[in-house]
Length: 388
Ligand code: MG
Image (cartoon, rainbow, N blue to C red):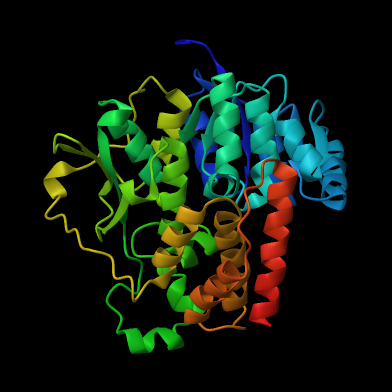
């Protein structure tokens, strides 16, 4: 496909990953263009993106927001941009006839149906939404295998693993090592965890990210979700995925092979690189995202502290159980993080909420997306009751 234009559907276009993806399109106009955008709730940004990129279709979260955007586009004399809304609108974006590649970057399970629909439509997916893989990884990977549709991870760790995996056979992989920054509380005395404020938790040492994922980094639940994501994406057992705390966030992850060799991927901490890798795979376009090796002084790797970060232990438990427990891990966390940000529960309450929800979740293995969403709703209800 070298030399041909890839037309993108970007789900979550106004978010961090969506905007980074558009900056790649800006940089490589001969390689990428925009077919459709699922923009969510930010009408100002959606309007600016529609004017700049002229997608065939743009979708908003609700009918009201879609109406507002359509009115503004009409007033501005912009034609040829259809406006849709809701889950149907997102699915219409991800399956658009003119889209060759789908970037799935809507946070949470909101992007699940559209991602599944894209795979069913045979469209390669660049996956930044880890919740999709955690909640419905078995369904998505099976559908992708059956249709020979590539799923390329944009999550920086999994992107690194994907790169390292290319040098060996699947049976030669012993352990996937996911690196974790350890978040802002890696060295905070355990007795001070109860007093952590949302402001403190929202300050991430190395990455600039959305609010939920920043809190998830502070609890290391994010790494827990990534353990499950790795199991699904790379078809390995939970016991084959390990976490190493690497405060510099320079090595994005490592793969240890059975002969004892360990391969690591190093690059700048800039999400544009994993996005570019996913968009261009199997090619590697020249970019300006260079890493200054001369400035590299040290690389530290530490064992994660499971007492300080109980979410890691909970994630391994959910990974072993799979199905409804993986769904519950993600759903309960989303509710608990929201409650923490609204100061309704303390920081350690996030892990306690998840633990309680996991304990009351019956073992089940949803086989369809509606079943996944029902299990997700059930876990949310439980979490809301526990938080209250
Ligand atoms: Mg990550």
